Amino acid sequence: MIRFVLPFLLFLLFIIEGTWFQIFIPFHLDNGVVLVPRFTLIAVVLIAIYRGAGSGIMFGVLVGVLYDFVYNELIGVYMFSFGLTAYISSFTIPAVRHSNWWQMLIVFCAIFIFEWLTYGLYYLIDYTDIYFEQFFVMRLLPSWILNGVVAIVLLYPARLLFQKLETYEELEQR
Amino acid sequence: MPHFFSNKRLILLMVSIIVLVALLGFSMRERDAITFPEKFVRDTSGIVQSIFSRPAHVVAGFFEDIEDLLNVYEENKLLKSRLDEYAAISAELASVKEENKTLKSMIEVEESLSDYVMRTALVIHRSPDHWTETIGLNVGERNGIEKNMAVVTSEGLIGKIDSVSEFTSTVQLLSDSSRTNRVSAMVVTNDEPVYAFIEGWDEEREGLMLRKIESSRTIEEGQLVMTSGLGGIFPRGLAIGEIVEIEPDEFGLTYNALVKPAADFYHIEQVNVIERTSANLDELLLPEKEDEEEEDGGTS
Image (cartoon, rainbow over all chains, first blue to last red; front, side, top):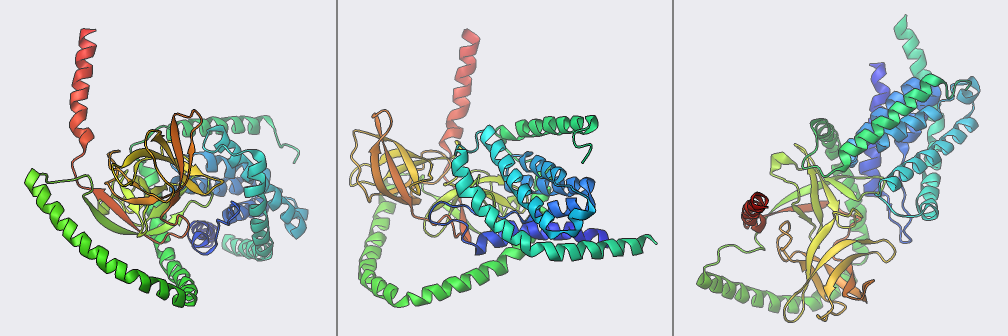
């Protein structure tokens, strides 16, 4: 049972991003600012930090496939971006695992890399034609703030969760 | 990270980039239908999403109701003044409909471009990255939804069905910036309607762009824009919006207009999917055209 906890939580975050967030939060503000929730990305990065690159990439690619299949007809952009971001952010050093500051820094960098990667890919295949400056001000900064706040809120419960999972898994293995 | 880019990983990265390009190439071309795994994933998540979206819509609706409650007095005043107007217009509509019916029967026309049937649907998701503007509905093939059907709210046209799975379908909104997003529209004037195309969304001025308006025709700000039914996808006479700005295009040959959409693209809860019932002109014409081409090919 315990191994279904992480996929279940990821799926829940995925649904919240696409359904609840879009209904409740006025993502479209008057001045053209776009708020993009990346809660699943935060979760994938944390998985990569606590569980290592392997499971980080696995969950990342799975979430990416879900994203691509459900929201876009275009397949591959999110799969690749999630996988690569998970790989880059997989610092499985004890110092990182025990320090919220390090994790926060990594999550912040991951959000930047991820947004920049998806923007770059979309720009490359002509799905968008906005310039980087505009993208930076209208999309990256607002979503950085939004997801940064969410990440700060999630960090402590995430650490408790991963510790719990670890002890349960050890118990199961005995 | 001592082995960040060891040989094995570098090869793995290369392979994944190749896979990415292959997948992009596969999915970027015009596809008639989505593949089976996509349908399966969409249906599964669609069921969960519709469970989640219903209570959320109720809660969001509750807050909207409170907001409405505050403006009740003002609204009531305005509505009362419109009520007399409404009675007169509905009487006129009834008589005009009757007249239209008799005239149609006189010239023996059975179907028109504006015939359609409607199905209601609930919005279950919206793409969280707003690179593409799409929303998901909780109806699919099972409910008789097909690609390219028009989708409207009570206020006006919002888009067309982009892809369909068994229980869900996605809608490409008019505000999507994709190049294939084009609607044949008409401007309602006092005499003959003026035909043009709705093409894309103006990010800065927050409106739809109506392009290729003939420069010989005069249109004014405030005139209504509707679907023309000539594109073969939408029925005739669905409201799109009204003109707010007119300007000549880059070459000075035609006019462009900025259209303020009648429907709200941001708070969508319930929509209607419209199926056009009149026979499609294209289907009647296409076989002939192909024959001609074949003949041409044979002679040359």
